[in-house]
Length: 310
Image (cartoon, rainbow, N blue to C red):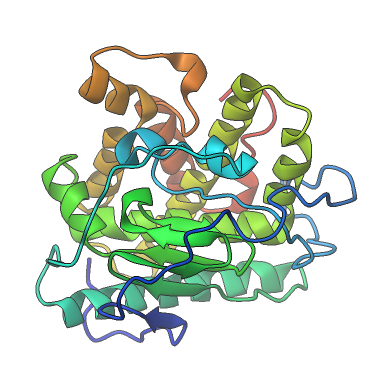
């Protein structure tokens, strides 16, 4: 990815090395504050976000899968407890170059997502409130409770911030076989996709519907939410191509990352068999397909994961 020398977002908060006296209680506020209104999932073209920014009180830690980290996102949604492995990133080692270089890389990627989504929202006469990306090591506070390295990257809709311990990129490369800077960019674009879903009401609708669902039903809806974020990441990849950011092999890096973090691939890797009813991010094939759909379509209208099969 041709990122060096480009503008960087100012919406980066670097807490690395600040220590980890993070909030260890339950998730902040009521994880299922009810929100009114009907289903507002974008279909075909873009729809107005009527009431954007009013979706509070929901806790959706939509990171890169519970099997990868040991934390079930559905437990987080319900405010339940799950056992998590103890992960320390005090010996943080960046995946590429120095820590400062990786910080700059994140700043460039986020700036490019801001350029894309500001333009997309402007087309429908709406503002795009830009998210803040928080870099941390070990543990830090978030609007959704303690952000811990063991949970992987995630988006918190309560404070509209993305949280990432950059040591995760080492795991993505070394443990899960997804190297490359564009694999790293895909992770960020996916989490920003969740921010777009928060603004358009998708996360609020899921929160509302979740309260009357079984866990298996909620898992199935979570898959649709995650695949839409993958599709939005694909749209950003198409935009990166238009901006002449892509190098040979970049799209393949992102697709490989999507495949490596599919629920079925991770379950086979960790336990030798799969349990489809527990999938909550999508299979490798689904994640690949929806990223490619966004990349080839280049428009949010192609990302309707809520109609028909996925």
